[in-house]
Length: 192
Image (spheres, rainbow, N blue to C red):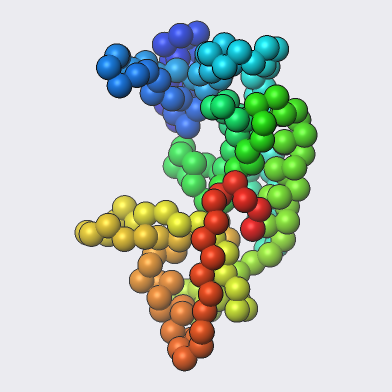
């Protein structure tokens, strides 16, 4: 993974922890999340803000697959803690977010995040079937993303940490032909 030098503090930073920071009329700089957070804290008047860097954590899913989660703390009026797996050096697979007040305890957020990840990974929604996957029960939870391999913009889904094309998911749904369904779409910061 190629690191990017923060244009404020000079720290060698992975691309997933770099923000293109500036204003619409000015120039943009590539800053690490820590520098952006400290600037945001100064602008917001948040005294004593401490930017915390969390070590990645490995958590085993229901299929006994160990998954490594990275964390990013961001201050933007509120405090957001993101947790994500890396796929080819970028956030992918399972992704989670918790949003709290700007003065929230980052360590308490981390504890809540790890509990949310464990609860989510304890359940599987897809089962191997032949050469593909099928829906395990009658409920599927995942994340909506985009299918960059499609010739036209199409959604893709990340279910159980695996990217599933819209077409493949449609084939999985065919086993439920004639059934009814309910589709709930919730913000990624809300617990499933």
